[in-house]
Length: 131
Image 1 (cartoon, rainbow, N blue to C red):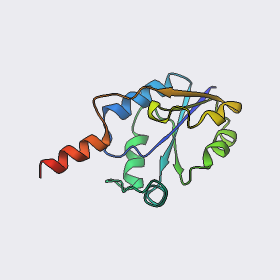
Image 2 (cartoon, helix red, strand yellow):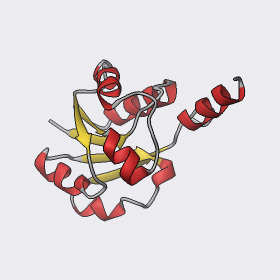
Image 3 (cartoon, helix red, strand yellow):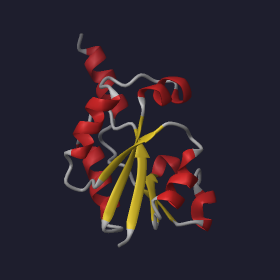
Image 4 (cartoon, rainbow, N blue to C red):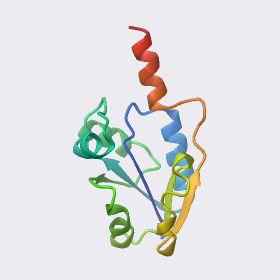
């Protein structure tokens, strides 16, 4: 079985997220999503998600391309996750291109193009401007 892993907050879930997860799953038989915890988002990423970790987790678990959701609690856990889950392919959006090339010694690293016309940041900005 070929395992794939990706990481993210997946807040304000939208079709760009679904596209990324669908394409990531095409690289293997089993897709693991490491979902940023609330504490990680606030303390390390310096952002606050609209939905709580548990709410986002239930949404991501409901997506048919996703086999397992695990918590992302720190930047440095990627290598230990790859080793622990025996991951074959690491997938991220292309806005991270080059940032995780150090993982190529342990698995294949792929940066997928994002869906250009949609983002959670864009949704937040548009909702804010409509107040």
